[in-house]
Amino acid sequence: MHPALKVLITAVLIVIVTEVSKRTGYLGGLIASLPLVSYLSIIWLYAENDNKQEAVQIVSQHATSVLWFVLPTLPFFLVLPWLLKHLPFAGAMVISTAFMFGCYAGTMWALGKFGIEVI
Image (cartoon, rainbow, N blue to C red):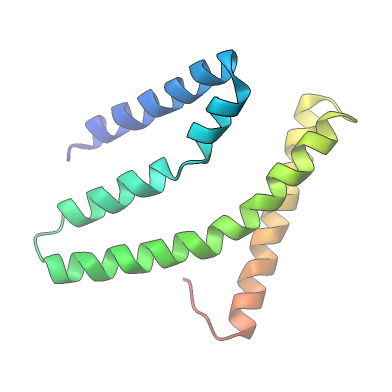
């Protein structure tokens, strides 16, 4: 698939999420929580590889990596709403993002301790 088409599809999804979120936060949150980017990436990884056995292996590895890296993003969504009640938007975003990156580092460390290689 042509990279420009991939960008267009991704941009359309972001616009849909933001427009729906303006009308109803819950539905916008539901759509945003769907693993649409991962879903599209998996489809493109598979479709663009002529060797389907290799494609399945790549998709499997990608899905496993996504699983491990989704977990440290969850605290961001716990911390951000609380911080927004106490700080300006920019500060809440910066601190929540820093916290998330700390969680990524902790996840990488923990996975390494258990012998799980993700990179």
